[in-house]
Image 1 (cartoon, helix red, strand yellow):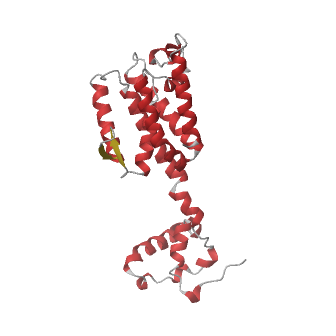
Image 2 (tube, helix red, strand yellow):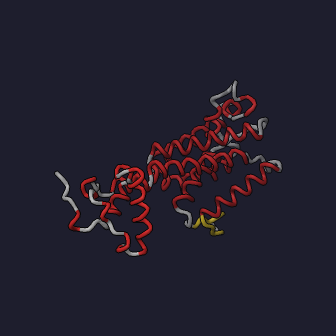
Image 3 (cartoon, rainbow, N blue to C red):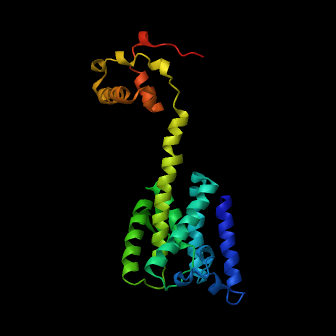
Length: 256
């Protein structure tokens, strides 16, 4: 197990033990939307409280199987943000749509982790009850549909559907933001060779008619961009791409 998955599981187990030994602790830590102003800490603490041994067992099994790969992919800090942001958003949606229903459990936070898992490994097969195989991406789609239907038709069996839905929504948007800020785009920027202005000084002499048709549209787009906004407007990837079409005799060696 990764460090924070191990710590989160340990914290949940310790709190569950305390629930069964300290009278009134469950009520103190549970999240009741209508009482949030009087008990603001419950937005966090409800994630560590569980209603039964099966409740905590299923949640911790899910965290054990899916959490480590997500933590390794995101890193410890972003994993924690994903986990707690998903749980807090679950509390917010419960406040909006089910203000008088007390909720407990890590399910909202774990649904955020499941969304991240499905985002990065969409075709990974997950076995429901250890028997029924289903791809991760399909599991999330079905989970969204089920929580929407169940939540707006009166949650069944005491399940906090809006907490689940909040975890799914927060997890999805956070992963999209992480990918935009820290994912493939940042990786490409770090690994693309630097092409200076001097290497493209004679860009006007690029003859797009001699460029293969597969690349011609992109070359013309970049040339138009330079005409409008100048060389400095090009991304590292655009500079590298265009440098391949500057005639060799026109290249000016970079100044070291």
